[in-house]
Length: 486
Figure (cartoon, rainbow, N blue to C red):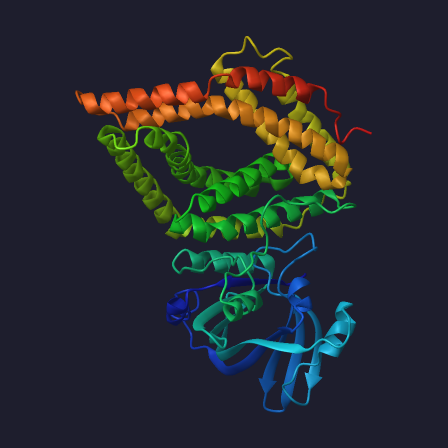
């Protein structure tokens, strides 16, 4: 049976608790670790998503070429340790980039560039049939230093995830959004680490349905994790927006692959739905405050009634973000991410080409969009809202399966579909804004009634013509060729 290796991030201050946990409860074996992280002076290794790690030992050194970022690779499983592409014994702890270049297919003559040092210990034990190793070290560059901790579990898949789930219920163990080598590179550059995945997934051509499922779940889980810190901080609206998009794409994918995902997929989808209920209010207040309410405040500059309305809206936003932070800090989020990581590694039997599966899935979603009819003029707002959601789900499927087909038809189709969704979104903004304004109402407060009335009038005026624009976008979409047909 193939062995599963799972790497998880652990806050350094939680390291001392790991081996005291009831699931382990033993004294670990300890060993010193001294290693250095290298790139190339011309940046070629970094651009290719590669790094060189030289681990110093008593009798020389070991040089490893590792993949620090997926780059063009379709799959990087959540919780996967950095793949070792080559390993070389060195007499001296000096990287040999010519050997690295030859293996990686890069030009020879690259000059080594020291990025960071890693000094600390590894602590190892075995529990419940799983080998467990804690790396507790200090990551140092010329300009900065910080502690890091990573936990690696190796063994049979079910045992590995069972132990990880038990530990994560009590300890802040999390599927990492970036590799340790990338954290070292970022520290040396005084910048943020690049995420393992972001944006929409891309299924490689020639993939089977099982491979497509794993690639999509892996990509979107990592994309969701990549945006979680920014969503938690709440300093800008981008974090919540991008995390919410990744979550919605992931829920959409689990629905598409529900027969393959089975009970575990349904459970993960339920967890994502609960998280979405925390992301939604934060996003709604961000859009309202940064959009129509900001315009209204500018138009009524100096009006204390509008300013008070905006202050109360800001307070509601802070409350929504506080609830979101609680959800992201809770064990439920860690366990959800672990369940998705396990789902991405599930041993599925689905050898059918992904193109055949994709065509059926796209046709089903297209039928749901077209059921609303060619003429939208008589549709009430609730049905237009359902059309917008159906269009969004079709777009997610198109983005997911699009790389299996020609690019030109795909771009035209998605652009036309996005226009329908955007115009219908303006109509939805009215309904969302009305609900938010209702939260800000104050009985028998004339100033508040004036401010809410002004906001409602402003939003209605800005949305004037949205129905006609949506109908025009719909007509253009109906004339587009299907990118998966022929």
